[in-house]
Length: 368
Image 1 (tube, rainbow, N blue to C red):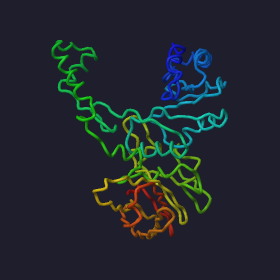
Image 2: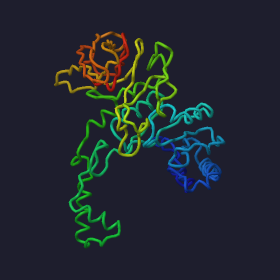
Image 3: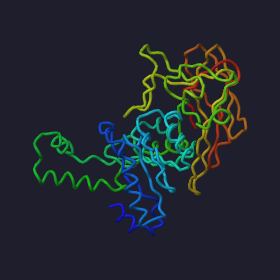
Image 4: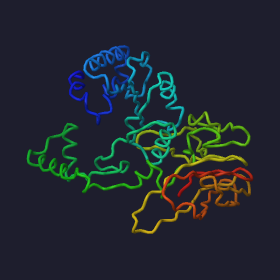
């Protein structure tokens, strides 16, 4: 089959490559894992009989997440693909993919990711961008959703079909046909509900709020700095390599970040504690506005909590200081602070650095 497909598309420049299998062999079929690479090799050999130009794309086993099968580089024009859902958006979670990319000198691609909260999106997709990994969001359009850019309106009586699939009596044919035609009429983009906040989270496009734990992923000296050389915070299985002081409000039930289906954030308050001299960096995008409208001026808002009676935080945009804020109060009392600036009018990428100047401070989120 792949030889036939390759023969048909061998001269099509619009085709980037051939993705041989989608999410092969979940764990309950792992007894066949050792047959995966021989099968990939067989398919690739067949493709190369008719097409020597196009890229071969290989996915790992278990929903394209397990790359332990990649023991032999079977072609000189490969791309490796992984998928990412419901898991930590941190460098540790993709480190095996980054290592294999260097070892084989091949590009890697995040071919499917989504199905989570917009907070998770703001971390995960920045993670891919910072590591130079191209990505594809899944899905852009879904039935009755709040976490995809477009939501298809659910047809009336849709649950009749759902209950039938779950084992109850079927609706009569005329009713089923009416429901399905309503579904088809609702599918085009025009009648869908557009969730602009989801798109803003994917591209960190202002106005937008990012949780403090999702500072940049380019490493120390670029995305964060620690005056004392690092901290021994709790780091509950999240961003452990950074040695920043990530913490959670203690609720007595242990410390573990939850990035699972439908959640994407901890039930507890997550924050980063900065000692004096520590800093965190965040990248945002100011979108292009229609010419006929006046340019928007954005401000920076943060949610902070002093650890001692008084703390001061400075903010820089694109390496230029825009001012500082002082926060006084009791430990554990969170406050929202507001910083106006004229540096956030021009469209494009902006780099925001938040630094603790005196005494420790906790930061929960930053918003433009």
